[in-house]
Image 1 (cartoon, rainbow over the protein chains, first blue to last red):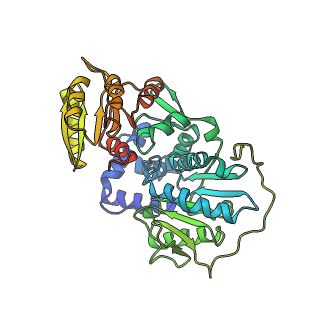
Image 2: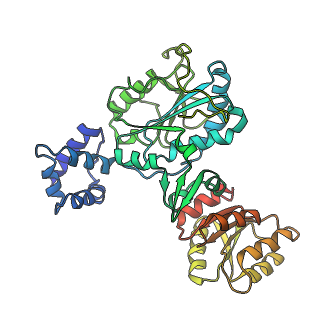
Image 3: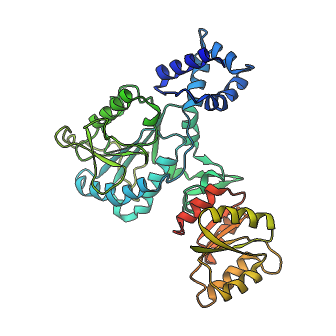
Length: 294
Length: 121
């Protein structure tokens, strides 16, 4: 791969996905894109980069973007964001939404599904506290390949051992040979959609909780600010934003403020936020177990 | 420093586990089977036990069942670490008093995640 080819790839990824590739990421490009080249019957990265510049190469372009934006993901990754969900966000929202009895959660970089499924497990574990409530969990990602995996909910033995307690594995998964599939009732709790954070958020709609972890790091400053402000707009004034362990809003936007004493958790600044939308009839009826079916 | 007893009949596995756990700041002792492990526990109860299932002389499940009935034997956190990877085996281990369960093959990340899960790290 020549320097000019690398430059082209950087520009291409920036415009297509917002991904900012720094100069020293050649190794990453090679490890992610060589398999794509091979699958397309191309001999080298140079051939691949030439191929995506030809007309009608849309499918190949999509494969390149997907390969570059896929992350490894763990169940209950970093633990704290899920402790915060159970100990802070859920209790607060159960109080403030008592008349509506419905909470909407958006996982904005859902990848292969571990984060939304971890939240679904948290809700199951909450048991009687959430009986009669409806929960909408929306998982979106830029890559349809990872979303297919998320939807299927099938994970390797390695994947189910990172972050997932053995009791939860037994409770919520079914063994399929060497693989483990999360049970149908858990899969039914999450809705999936392909979505690019660079797009308008109008189709996403209001959400009480937004998990947007370990994805802003791929964007430049202006794009980060834009995404954070778009999230603030779709959130009621008492909503919650969850960022990754190494991420912050500080120095980026004043639309959010840190929740005191709770690491990685943010709420819209009261003066800027809009009030909660009026109560509407829930789209999904609550069921016995307390979790919305679809 | 917390102490972990590594019980496995394979010296290679013991060495791999030792290296991972020493990196995680544990002091390590080793046993080749359940009987040796039991003797070690009777001398000095470890904080944690990484336990293989299939071993000569006394297997992991028999060791665990015996340990949990001994005085002070409820204290160590026991993490099974075995090639047995089916629901029936996992369920038996948990019922016998295992705190966590690792399906081989394992790497540092898995050991770390599981030890975190049971509050050892």
